Length: 263
Image (tube, rainbow, N blue to C red; front, top):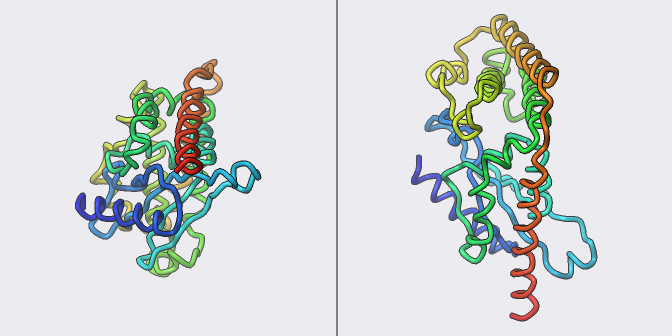
């Protein structure tokens, strides 16, 4: 799997460059980052790209798009300004790229980007209220999606009556917020602990009735724990931490614009 992931990172990086993007880095996203992948798991990535100087001056809309590959796997492509703004909002689907060991960084920007990874833990919890709200909100989204017949999962709906992957996400989010609340680091909590059970859930070990019951139960547990944490704690925000995003973004854009304009 590691070889496949590395090959995808390299392939995505080249594809984006050939398409005309100035690439800062390509990062693995998804189940491989928290130990819940199988040989059938898709390999999806997120990429940070840079605007052209003319686009920046004209205040053109920053890139934020998804590229669907022939394999139906995807690259989530975002301008560095958009990516850093999303990271600040504590969306855990994005925060995981700060911790993934599977990443391919453009060597031109490696040193400039290094402070982000050096401060990943601090940046991931700079706003605990936003983080816990994000986890709770995402869990509710997975509950809504449990039986929704999206075209990409209609085969699972037809087979099980629900999408087991959504249920496994609900369980995972419950484990994640519980471990964070107990004082565990973001990096540590990101790696699933109950892997055997979660993998069995992912492949459909529960019937529809049990899946619906458990999905509602664990989503409610997440909501209740989130409410408890936000009620009982006066979380402050680490404003100095998010200055790192601005500093890194500025230095990378300065380097790129000088290269683009001066050759």
